[in-house]
Image (cartoon, rainbow, N blue to C red):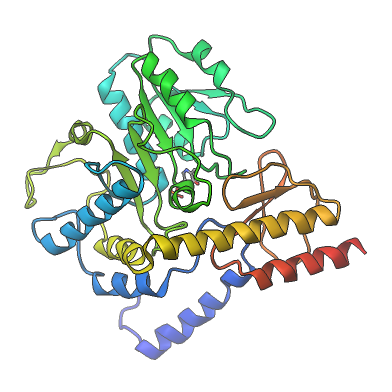
Length: 365
Ligand SMILES: *Cc1c(COP(=O)(O)O)cnc(C)c1O
């Protein structure tokens, strides 16, 4: 650290040089994050200094968090939902597994999930000493439901389904998975970190949420398709008593106990997430999602025309291809099975898709 500080100009001119090294969003085709909506940025700035880790001091901001959870609960078909704003899908998934473990305290717990489960479950299971039993996928990368029951034993604490897989944009048959979970008295968590703010706005919605009575908890990330500022995830639970299982005493705060994983938490991101939902409403979100889905289809058709077949038929705006090499200068990603992966986020405009396809065409010529 410097002994004597430097000027504001010096800091910001040096920071701009660092920022120039970042990839601009108009070249990013690989990310589930996007430029925050200007409304989110404004709300975030307004609540920047608030700390939801001590909600008695920031009661207004805490009310905004309750409202955010209520809005998401309404959207996902459970009006008396419980939950809180997390730092993202990773924390939501960790907390869901903590709940499952508290409900069924066994000596060597295991959890059932599709092979397509997000790597955050590897972290969660490492932290919580839970074994993962990965269920193979079918030809379109969905969990093979008929393989689940064989893996359940007396140490199984829960079953997970994914609604919008990170790699292929696939929704598992959530109802079938949840029914198996309930038949065995097991906790059922749906990881809709990505799909949770896409699926409710599709023309033909795919069932994945609390409308399925056996679903106990859902992860949904406003900092992905909710166009909020980073970090905002949400963990939603059907039964608020399940959150209380995580309570630990907090001696020096305005509240006596807390169930969150984080201590100090930004109210800025929470205000940002709520502001976008309020500002756009269902019709605005439908328009955003419809644009992203149209772009996804255009990309799939365009790539197919050049001989690069889609690797999966996605339910959400993630497109994957049998394509060994993309044109230079674009940031794409690769799935574990070696498929080229592009996420058609709101910042990925139609012109970007057309420019990308044109370069793919030149590359093929
Ligand atoms: C992005 C994602 C996560 C992890 O969320 P973070 O916000 O990166 O912690 C978990 N599950 C799924 C399905 C995701 O798409």
